[in-house]
Amino acid sequence: MFYNLNKPLLGLFLFVVSGTAVFSQTGRFQQAADYKMEVDMNVTSNQYTGTQVLKYTNNSPDTLYKVFYHLYFNAFQPGSMMDERSRSISDPDRRVGDRINALKPDEIGYLHVNELTMDGMKVDYEEVETILEVTLPKPILPNSQAEFKMSFVGQVPIQIRRSGRDSSEGVRYSMSQWYPKMAEYDEQGWHSNPYIGREFYGIWGDFDVKITIDKTYTLGGTGYLQNPNEIGHGYEDAGVKVPKVDGNTLTWHFKAPMVHDFMWAADPKYRHEKVEMENGITVHHLFIPDPETTENWEKLKEYTPKAIQFMSEHFGQYPYKQFSVIQGGDGGMEYPMSTLVTGGRNLRGLVGVMAHELAHSWYQGVLGTNEALYPWMDEGFTSYASNLTMSAIYQPSDNPMRGSYMGYYRLAKSGLEEPMSTHSDHYHTNSAYSSAAYSKGAVFMAQMGYIIGEEARDRGLHRYWNTWKFKHPNANDVIRVMEKEGGLELDWYKEYFVYTTKTIDYGIKAVNQQGNQTEIILERIGLMPMPIDLVITYKDGTQEMVYLPLAIMRGEKAPEEGAPTRIISEDWPWTNLTKSIRIDKNKDMIKSIEIDPSKRLADVEQENNKVEF
Ligand SMILES: [Zn+2]
Image (cartoon, rainbow, N blue to C red; front, side, top):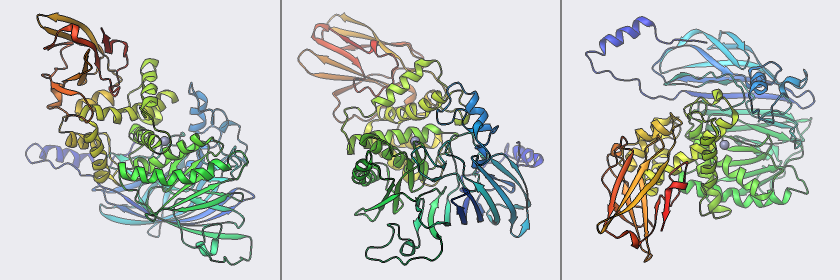
């Protein structure tokens, strides 16, 4: 639906005024949403009831006349947008396919809101599949608060995608996207995307959640358990004897500060193990014991703390005191302070998925990029971080990014590539989405090291974290940080690599003896310009690098550690298709000439990158 916040006349007035006065653009702001929920889960009917008190703070300069809630579970019904999309897309997710269409009434998911009030006033609302459109009884003014109260009822769908009951591995409840969740409103307006199976964006706030459930179930998820010594299930303090409870249920009380979502999982078969890290972080692992996989889960307990440590050193300090790796879901999915992963994996697979989902704590959890608009800044940077982490903690690799580059090259040659600026719901194919978001997004960051230098890029990652944590950075924000750390203009990099599908292809066109010099003629064949590191290896074993900056960078990267002695060439203007450089050595002294032996330049045709004599 279309919803215009500004009254047209006011807009016109501002436009006229801005002609003569300094126009101050609307600044960035963060909405806040503090949730208090009490939920009752019936493990026989798989239905639940709940109450929610939501303190919503409008920190925007805009007056809000409407708000929107996500009701994700309504996607799991025959005929939903998610069902239609999964059956019409040419390469459906095999986990979904036509399964939603086949769900029976007691297998579907639903989430319905009853009795919604705002500051005690009755509120009009309309459920439009996965979005609740709410017309407010009085507007929420800038810098003011409103309190929404509701009750809701839900049914947990058979596990189809991410959340649900009775997963293929027998996990009873993977409870993500399970409660009415306020949509995010930011400087780009409302983000009330219908759920068609991909990507989330939420408001940070404090969650206080009480879950009443059959007492045989063990729970894990987002949030610190407030009553561990009443609950037990491995959460109790050492030496505490947990009192027996009367009745069949336990009420688990969780609190999670500064998170934008709340996931929980529950199963009576879970084994729960705790690891206390030296820095005060507690790592929980919850899994269903199985002769094939228990050993891997036992070993995983060593790797999760190592990964938290490595990522904190390289990408910014993990800000919570807890992380939980929980068997559940249908692959690997990130949530604040936790992840749901399938458990039937070999050790490498299990450590790999943990590292990936944990890395999301940085890019999805705390930086909180809008994954619908900038999936590459979440999945891509997460893949970049987890590639490095796996090489550091599991198996050293000479090129941890190889897989990401290969994925991008396949995409670029597939004919299916769409620009990374595509809204993640609106990619034409799943493969174009995933290769762009995961592979090309990781290449974006790895290649940043080629453009501004590894050290500047690494400093940039810390600066990005320190500047933008809990603030929803966009594409421009990450570029600006890297421009500042690298001392270079990088708008062209964003414009070509993010907004277009133009590719990089440079080649060595000719090498000629010219008097007692050697002339090397380089050519740009691809449409995307890049700076060039050209490495010349002489027959005596020495090396030199000719560095050709792009004129539009307005500078040069700092020399990189471990690189050969560098000769800085004059700039190569992007308009010029060829560039001739001269070396004060005879051609017969040269063994080979190669464009970027580091393989960080995402050159889609590498055959023409090297000549050997
Ligand atoms: Zn991911």
